[in-house]
Length: 217
Ligand SMILES: Cc1cc2nc3c(=O)[nH]c(=O)nc-3n(C[C@H](O)[C@H](O)[C@H](O)COP(=O)(O)O)c2cc1C
Image 1 (cartoon, rainbow, N blue to C red):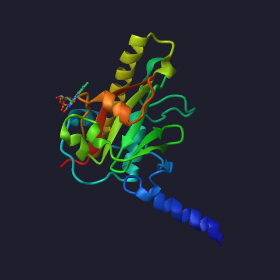
Image 2: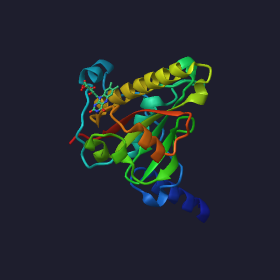
Image 3: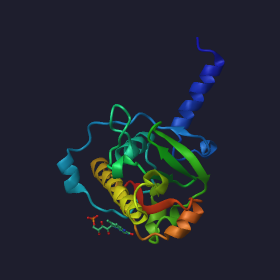
């Protein structure tokens, strides 16, 4: 027989796990994502053959499992010793953080713990692209590089490397989307200064691209 407090903990963990995208009551908690699936999916060449930008999104949230797998594929840890990621980065600086904007909050993916940390409440999806469809996706990934993690690189190279790293991450997302039948498009046409202000980013952070993801309409 489990003590009542443990049952309560199990129940709240289950409720939390069921409400990653849509649970305002838990909006400010750190969300532990389910363990990512690191095998299976579509054969690589088939996913490459199917990769394309899609800009119309159905009104349907991603499941926790899909979100977990998506973020892991994007820039999760793929070495047994926890050292490196699914996308390369300059001297392994791993300078890019992935923010996830949904209808109720902005969260940041922490690959080390495979969690989503609450950053701010509110819906900023409409600010993640000049074109209106960004706001219609259930979630928008926002790629933000931290210059302090590549301080040894000259400033102009930091900007270049930030964009290059985001592009690798974005392609992982494109291929995962192709494999899972999701719609996505990388966006450079973004009011980056306004979005950075809205997200209260620091001066040493570089917002590179955004990328809405959802089911195709
Ligand atoms: C750096 C970059 C920025 C992009 N910015 C936008 C954008 O702001 N809006 C948009 O609709 N598509 C954007 N795209 C997507 C391209 O328009 C798209 O990749 C291109 O038309 C080829 O289509 P495909 O991805 O289906 O092969 C961008 C792509 C890249 C690589």
